[in-house]
Image (cartoon, rainbow over all chains, first blue to last red; front, side, top):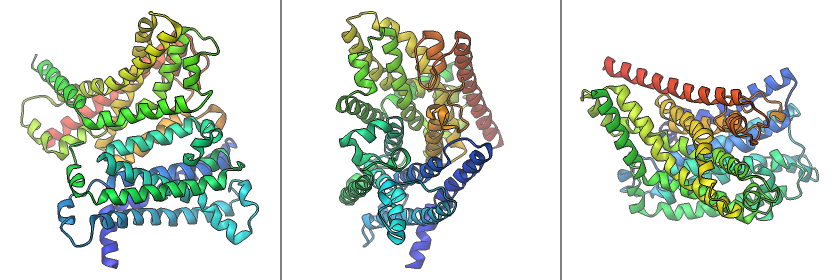
Length: 237
Length: 263
């Protein structure tokens, strides 16, 4: 099991594993700069790193690894299903990002840069710490599931990457629209950055996670469509 | 003359290849659909305001607003769709084949750049004209198209040309997911970050492919986050975007030529 895990980590590459660390280190540098020049909302920038940029990076990575496997034909002949192999890989990516994000949360809390989320004030320390992780868990799972689903449905990592990026950007441009329109709130992944005091924050997090689980279930079904997987060959997008 | 023949051949081929590329249409169609759904399903937003014109803006003002909406989102599609064009030649071993021909690298790359960018702008033009048609019907004016052409050429094309130059060049030096992430991060930081955020940014400078200075300076509109600009600043912005795009493509040509010589 350990050798399988090591092999999959080698396949993912060191840059995939370094990405969440580099993103958060980059934002730590930006925060240091903002504190030095005494400008900008430091808490919002730190929240954005966990809620906006980390999930985007996970989405970009997963849209690439889910459709590009040079040994696909070989994988399809193995007793273990290709679906479980893909899910194993994305689980590594998500769990690694989760570990980095958890450590970052502890550091951000220690530096008193954590956003003031109104709905979390009702909970005591152990539960509020767990609930705090919803800031990054919900959007990360949502972007991972959306990227995987779109990559498999459209059989193209490029189209999936573009659509995920466009959705990310459109929500930033129209964040007030997403926050004030009821049917858009379930897909509003930046509630902590732009609306931490909103009454819908907790329900928004669970709606994102529920949507992610539904998309993952649909992706599982798509991964069993062998012919479709073989048709999404690299370089023919 | 030979270089011109290579350039025009490459340009035509890349244009046709990109036009027939399923991934490009699969990218832009859902993008247009998302914008349309947000425009129809949410009251009082920019697209509804554009189509109903409650503020009674002029036709040119509405065309500029429509161009600004397109400029905010569609460059993402253009940038990512073009990102694999040079890398794809390497992956499919076509580059090795092309290097055995006497065709100069710079002529091929320039043809690839202009041809693939031109083809990628076709769906953007389609969506832009769709909006112009609606505006023409709303304002009962046949002059919408006449006004739409210079707005497109001056506010949308320079930004797209700028973005596509970097999209062809940067992935030669980095992996695709990393480029996508950096490009999206740049687009937010360098074009859409509000000046009020306090974070140093390029978003209110003349170096924004969003075309704010060009739109305001040449046509007198408003393009957030730019609210005032002179025609001189607009001209500077236009020349800067095109100039940097040219330099980036020149760098790519020189780099690939050097790689070819070393082999």
